[in-house]
Image 1 (spheres, rainbow, N blue to C red):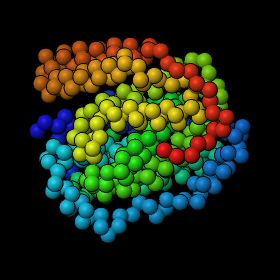
Image 2: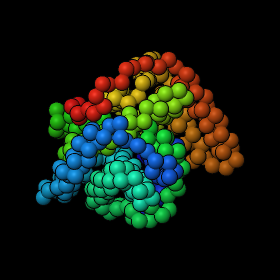
Image 3: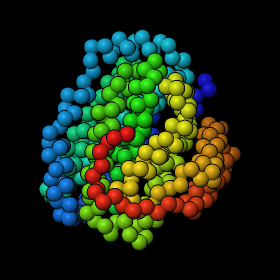
Image 4: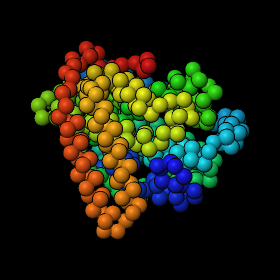
Length: 359
């Protein structure tokens, strides 16, 4: 099998993959709930109340329901995929579910552990949305008899502690880049419906609009607390931008057949997503990465090459394999450091915090 993704043949394999913790796998997070409880959104109260009414309207409440043709489409399309391609698609579903469920757990835990009425209300709405997303993906995994036990996943997966400001930066970015990823795929498949090899892609537009609104919520929180965008915090913004972009690039290049089946090139797709994300993040971040810089692009390619070599070292195992992994990790850190020091772009924040999902 030529695919670089981990083989998933049974429900146990799928659950093991979801529980797995690595540099590329989605993580579960916890944070300082008392600090979250102190977050103030009063400077943008008018915009906040408008957004809460949008959440209350719940315009996607009936979206995540499969229509009568869904199962038939799956039965027809899956027989046309190679074993390698099927593995990459399943890997995509497991990773996507883990990411969505990670958000559900984080938002729900924050909701339960704070009394701040504004944040408590927001977290309830966002946990609701992410639970729907995760459940919808899980239905597609069950089509392959590979459903994830979400209760077991919540108990068994390791949790990473992030300071509240890291949660704000990372979650804002993950929601907005999630929108950019899904809408790029959706628009491409609108133009090329013959490349839509699974019906789940028909749900991507309104799905990613949920992601967009979630990002809007965090944009309001960050802009209402401008100290998060000054001084040393700009260095953290730079770090999270690079970490999210680099992780996405390497992860996507481990699944090249997935993009090929949709008529996409992984690198072209990734840089299109980066461009959209850069346009969106002008609402919050005073800096942007220069993703067109040839040195930036060469650095991401090196990270993927190192990641492939590291995977081979893991499979080799033993003392020599561990030595190789340590070597490759040090090389990855060095490349990441060089990428971090590349020139960045300064940008003015948008006058209005809110944006519309117009891409």
